[in-house]
Length: 79
Image (tube, rainbow, N blue to C red; front, side, top):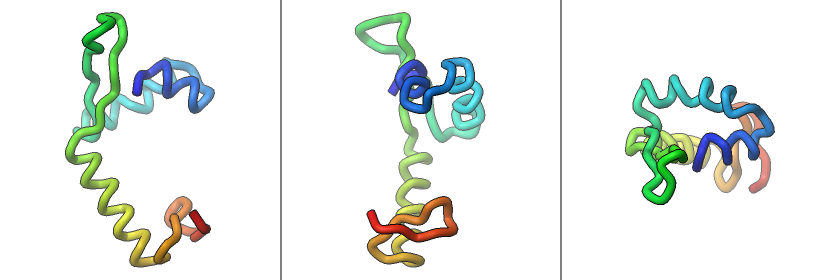
């Protein structure tokens, strides 16, 4: 992922994406990585902490609503 790519996906400015990503980087959930092909591009990488957190959330979803996804931790809906 890149900040630009995320901004396009979410339809918000790159500055807004950076503002959202800063706390996640500061708490160790993601890291900014240089693009080996283009020094102007910064890639967003998920850390082990983020991947572990995602796994825990998915496990909790399956306990609460087996075979379904919780949206946002309140409602259950089919995949």
